[in-house]
Image 1: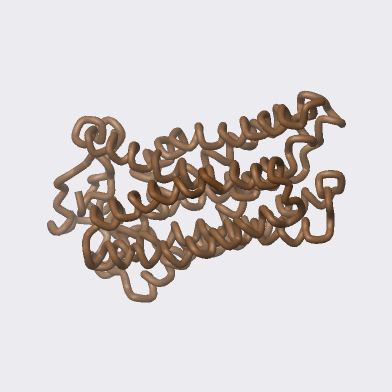
Image 2 (image 1 turned 90 degrees about the vertical axis):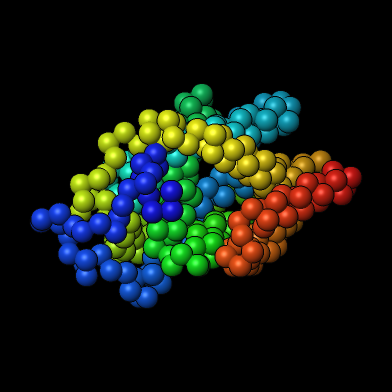
Length: 348
């Protein structure tokens, strides 16, 4: 599958001569400058997009309960807020499938542009939503709808950026370059946490002011920057070759299920364990230390800043290790580490 970016279309010979009228080989040649530009576009684009996604995680834990789900018992409002947080994750597989098919048919660059527009628009609109006090149940309904759009965009962004970098990178450095979008996710989380840290540093209850909207409204700037970065990006060289040879798969999902069903299920299972634990630390743990332990103010956001900073350092290092020692051994080692670290966390 190494030479086949279109999922479910294995064994395509991308080294065969181009048919008449195909794209010349020199136009598909990737230079070092192209590779570096793709790295920046993927990592910074993911950082900007996951800034939006992380904003919602923090807002679910710290703000959205009283604004959109008021109740006499604050715990009920918090649970409802986390319900919308869950919805964003539940829809992510759908976003991955839908935009994955589009990526296999229309190109990787198209998907990266579409997802950043979707995520940025949804996050900006959250910043102008009326609250429950203004429009009643329409407020949480609109919030849920925008969260669904966020989830669709996030589900496609992470996979799309990683696929793009894998196809751009030299074979012996694919682990490192494919890790860059995931490092970008950590950087976006840091940015979102820092924004809330600054807001909460001087304001005891930011939900009672208009300032809670500011981080979401900044998404307008994020959209502009991310689009500018990605418009300058070349299409994936592997997809360009498929287009030139008229080998773009028109049924990528069906072919994937026919030829790689076991691998697909294994991948889903691996991601469920790893990403589920990460989300618990990012949102539920922060809610716990603020709502149960009683550490008010910016402490929750600051904890996330430190955690995401460590993650941003470890992710590219893990990518380098996979290039040197293999993917399986590195993945297993970090999975075991995540399992072991859960026990002292639960005992806190």
